[in-house]
Amino acid sequence: MPNFLYTARTKQGKLEKGFFEAKNENDLIDTLQARELIILSIEQAARSKTVSKKDKHLHSKAKLDDMILFGKQLTSLVNAGITLLRSLEICSEQITSKQLHIALLEIKKDVAGGSSLKDALAKHPKIFSKFWVNIIETGETTGQLGFALEQLTQYLETSATFMRKIIGALMYPAIILCVAIGAILVFILRIIPMFENIYNNFGAQLPLFTQIIFNMSKVAKNGFLPGIGIIIGCVFLFRAYRHTHAGRRNIDNILLQLPLIGTVIKNIAAVRFARGLSMLVKSGTPILHAMDIIIETSGNVIIMEMLSRVKESVKEGKTMSAPLIESGLFPDMLSHMVGVGEESGELANILEKAALFYQERVDAYVTRLTTLFEPALIIFVGLIVGTLIIAMYLPIFGLAGAVAK
Image 1 (cartoon, rainbow, N blue to C red):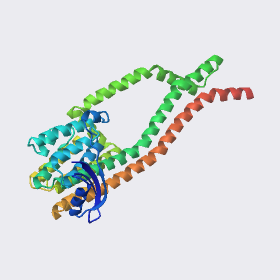
Image 2 (image 1 turned 180 degrees about the vertical axis):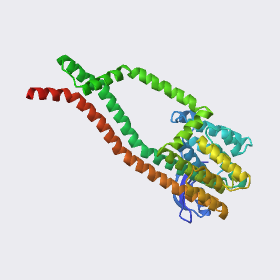
Image 3 (image 1 turned 90 degrees about the vertical axis):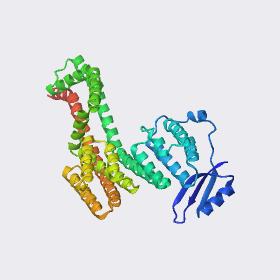
Image 4 (image 1 turned 30 degrees about the horizontal axis):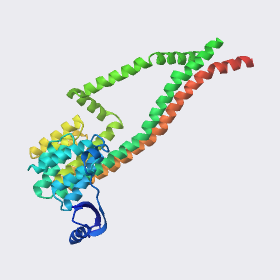
């Protein structure tokens, strides 16, 4: 039977898109109208005939956007009443990531063999995190897989949008910094030696400041390639140290202690904690299991240790808020909001509101930082370049003064 892509609205006005397999368009219209949907458009979806033809259009790794697209498609298909096997088949044909495409074929094979979707996804931990697996397990257990997928997709989209804003805010200053460093290197390695050759040909007596700049340029030029080698070596040593537990812990601790940067990292971690725990609690995940998942996805050893203490506090029948306040890593208001949520039984809703609040706060904070950083960087580069130019022209000014006398 042909596969159709439909767009419709529910009675509440919510837009719904999805794939549906039907004998013909009229049969699909009858099915959608029976679900009290207002049909906006229907078109037949083209199916790829062979995997080999589609392979040349696939990129390799499964990116976050691929996971979001897969989540949206699977949500629409499951909510449209299409069987899980058929839904996985359709998603595998539409996906653009080769890694995810191959994984979905294996997942479909496992599900067809009687495995649960949760167990099938768990075999691919590099693609589907424990967060994914847990949400799917909850959806399968409660019989609300479509709802669980919808919540998961919304979480991924919100997280992706948040990180894009942070990266986007930092991109322009990073570009300016790279251009500035490149300009200074060109000036030191190319322009200054040209001036030095000119003055040497004239046998001019150079001012001390100009001579110092020339000497610095010689050192930089002679040590440029060895310096690059040293930098590359340091990067490799740093990465090796970062992969040790002690190294990772020390580096993560230093990052949290840095002025400005540490504040941003702490607030981002607070947003992830609040949004992730809210999502898991809403899906029906037991709080201790939810904390295990949050700990593994926190990404910072110091914060992982703090969240482990929070978990132990809950395990002992105590509150979550006390160790959060004691650690001082998360904002005090978030810690107190967690306490209010525990007392009122509205922990998931309060955490969701807290995540939105601190997400807006991080956005504003990063925007202010980059706004201040840009002119400061331009002024700094201007001072360096201006100093170098003055040093280059000092002999000419001295020569002009001697002629005037």
